[in-house]
Image (tube, rainbow, N blue to C red; front, side, top):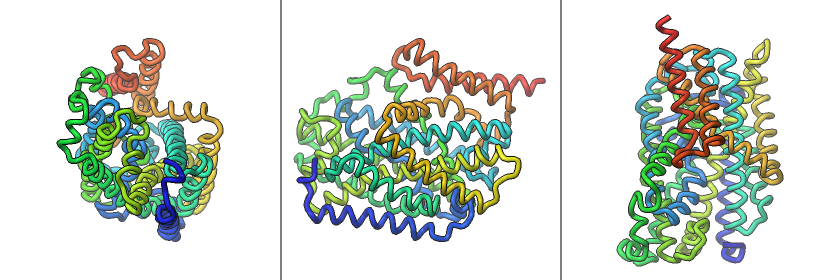
Length: 462
């Protein structure tokens, strides 16, 4: 889809939406005057707001357009594997959220880690949090430029500058308050836009029966296009890959009322099940309409083909929302980790709240700007940053989960588990070449768990 596919009304609606996002972000964050306000926004949000902001932050381009593309190629197995992520959210709601009251003053993942693993554990967590958030932020920026180019016909750099310019402005000024306010708006857009696109697509094909008749039968079977081992690896990767990453953990800190946190997190997990099915279903509709289509264009093709003027621009705006709501969360988490988990612990005198706010704003501005440059100019470094994603779960997940669950352990257990996790990932992926198609991240998590638990048991016996 290019510039000629949209008319003046489409551009007006999308432009008004982007201006509304900027206005709401600036307005919501206008009274932020301390680092804690910037990081956790007063800790007073309702269950619905927790649900909306958490859902908006984890539903990115991969879970929408990427899901549609994979279902076009592989069938429903991809959306079923994505339900591993849904299961993860439900488990966090039931196991982790009820215990979050043990950290009433935490603003970052590093604060949780510091209690059991000391300052070194906090700084190490902060470093990997920045690498992880920077990598995912870079991927979201690239996706943002692609969407502006695909739907609006803008050059890549123009789309990146518009989208990230808006995010950097409200994120720098308002922090978490601005993010939560814009997330709620963006969540409402995507919660309506994606199901609407699927409904209109099925209607254009001629109904569910006609769609099923036009699609190869193996697309409705779990193990027709992948082996059971590959499916299990994919399911577990979605289950563990983004478990307890900084933006999601920090959503557990934005309310002092623990039942609200539990309900909001649980609802987000439940909501993701039909949402992933809707996004994947669009890929099936595209396959039914044009089997020769480039799978990458399955969702844009349906938007272009079946939606009328007005609705089309609303759905495009919802897809732009998907990327923006993830990008602002990872940008904010990277900045908070730099200030709270790296700069502050390494200082002899801790930063004051006002000085910390100033540092957080400067860091947000610099981090966002540098990420834009990397996304536009230095693709190889972007790949390196994204590669850091593979090391979050094998290094941090096990000790972080133990800390949140109240399972006290020592610094020795943390360092031994982290070193073993890195070694396991490296050997499995680089030396052995991922035997059986099983991802090395899962092996690293498993080895970390064994070593971390073993060292903890030996210390308790001594």
